[in-house]
Length: 80
Figure 1 (spheres, rainbow, N blue to C red):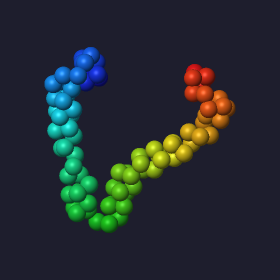
Figure 2: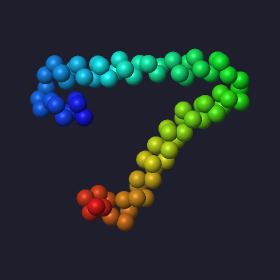
Figure 3: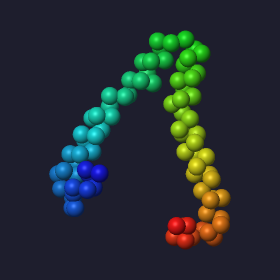
């Protein structure tokens, strides 16, 4: 919201805000690297499932888009 809500044209803030957001998200890079080494295999399987189920559901959502638009004959505007 800050990036596109406060900026109406390209300026230095357009480069600054994503850099700040990226530096905050770097806090999570260690989770899938370090945590699996702390726990036994049965827990690591659950952790891997938890991390990747979002990817699977997103892929299924993309595949389901074809079937969701059929009642509207491919016209998304009429799907209000």
